[in-house]
Image (cartoon, rainbow, N blue to C red; front, side, top):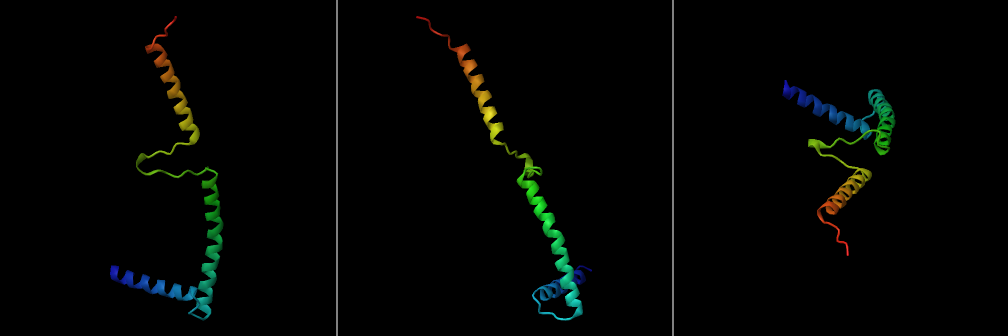
Amino acid sequence: MRETLRVWLAGTETYVLEVLLEKRQGKIATVVRGFLDALSRVYRPIIKARRFLYNVRILQVKQPFGKRRYSFWKVFLLALIISALGGIILAILIPTVSP
């Protein structure tokens, strides 16, 4: 069964490549070429819309294994909070010396 499927897929791949490279002529090859052209015309705007949604960050890239991407503002606010807390802790631990 697997061998039959593998042989059939190899033959189909060869036929489609020959049709695309215009090595095959005839009515069936013309119909297959037209069908593939129609599929590409439908597929292209879908991919353009998907890339647009990623560019405007409506769709987000998923990070594998729990890795997180932080935006600039998140990192900036985190650094600001840490530095403010550090200043408060230093003010408590180091008493001010009055002359």
